[in-house]
Length: 205
Image (tube, rainbow, N blue to C red):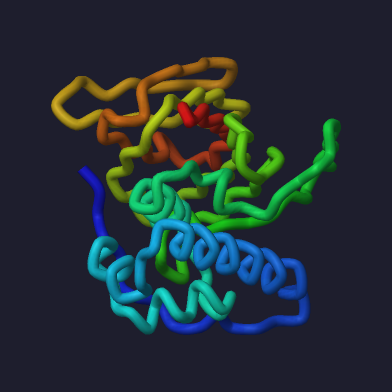
């Protein structure tokens, strides 16, 4: 089960948006390249995603931000992995210092959580890790499905992970959860304390 978000407008520039703009351009270029490899038009890609052709144009030009669910959906339609649409890292060793890592919204809305990407991008990379800070003011997460599997580790706070048609699981500091990504899932905060969570995905192709 997955949900479609409303088509966003162009990203709003800010003084610190240089890296974000470059990231969006790199992702857009990867989407365009992969679409052309498949002989697919922008209109065809838009129809399969359930969005407007103008949104695809904005994405490919790096003029619109992409949420994590939409990145996963794009990868599915284009027959690749989310890593395959991320900027290529040629480094054999990569260090991401505390407080750094590219931010990506967890949904296509202004108040969405903005987890930080901690792993390398590019074709052939199977791991994709994000650090989430989930606060009491955050909206509920949308249902989410993807290929591969997820590993969830709670650093602090309390988290409830819900699965479609199954009992929810509550996690506290030091608890870990590993599950298949094709089970519709979402999480929400338990209690009034911010939760810090590491989520690692593994992709099959």
